[in-house]
Image 1 (cartoon, rainbow, N blue to C red):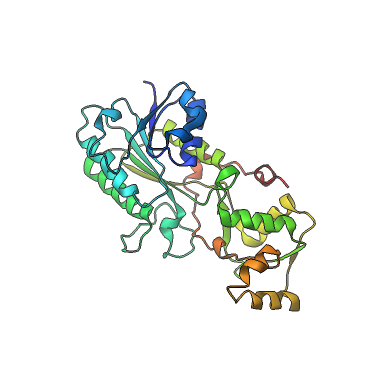
Image 2 (cartoon, rainbow, N blue to C red):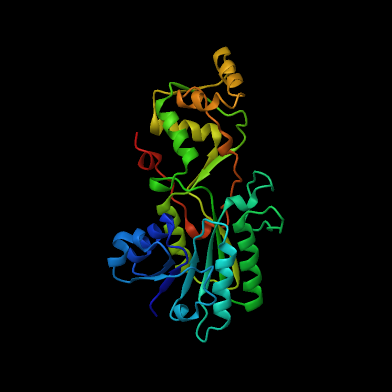
Length: 307
């Protein structure tokens, strides 16, 4: 049986890159979205089809689910639950084999539950101020149990590499390239974790090539190390001449004090004198169980960030 994957939001650059990766591996891919002009060369690739569909507004999309073996939710907005509900409502009326559902989730579902590390077995609780994907995880869990159908949640940390490195990390990388010396964040007990697009694609392909039933939860990452180790490895890849300061000197104390004034922070960051490391305080995913399936390969930092 040929494998056909539906990606629910092709308006996202990540969805388009993942679609290219699946097509290169012999999958057929259908995409939903509104920005057809953003598809570029995807439209000409064999095995790819596109439906100009707004899942939030369409009441039912059953006709497009026939022949679909797997559905991948790649969502970046607040309407993920509405999109997921429309797909499941369509599945309820489907008169053929029900596709497996995969939700690409995030470590952000653990915000408010501590920095971690959080294992795949940690229960996600329903709260009023929850991340949209946290609500989507609850929804997919309820549907999987009610319909007794295969569903899977794959949680990942921030994505690094190419066009998907977020703005805060890009600013940090640029700073490390230019600085002569850098001070570690005060909380050196934290860990720095990320995943590359290639690693994410490998994990998703491995998952979809395997057999699973009911609800499964996996964590996938490329890199996870304590901040002091991560800083040293990043500096070795980006700027071998930069040194890490082990103690805060008078100059650094003055700079840190100046950074307490919000109006001065942009100037200090522009001059590479001070860096806001709050973006490093993210929940850490424990991938011990998932690594048995995904067999992680260490990322080469120099490949992701060319000096």
